[in-house]
Length: 130
Image 1 (cartoon, helix red, strand yellow):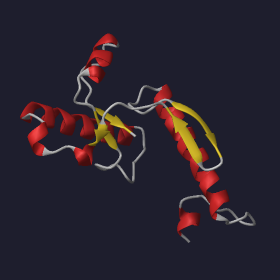
Image 2 (tube, rainbow, N blue to C red):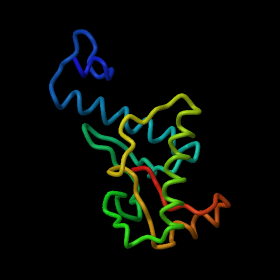
Image 3 (tube, rainbow, N blue to C red):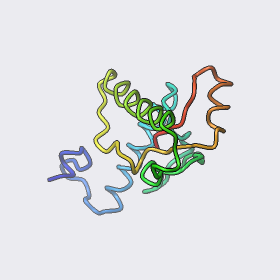
């Protein structure tokens, strides 16, 4: 089954949606914490309980909500480069995000994230993974 392939259901364990959601939330929290701890651009994981993962607020909007007329060509190029750099960085560590798309990349065009990044000497950041 799909759940077995994802490692969500082992032999002789309950298969209720709440149990599987709890296991999924635990895995998501664990991955998010591990990635955040090594400075991947993820929200700060706060905790998890049952089927919920609590995380810090992320400034910006999902990439799919960005319209071409709202970004300049240099901003669009930066968003593309940061997105591909994120995917390559994950791949170099043996990780493939099976659902990295415009619905779970956050874009902050306000400049606030750039100021934060400049303070940390990380460079200009428009993109954060949600």
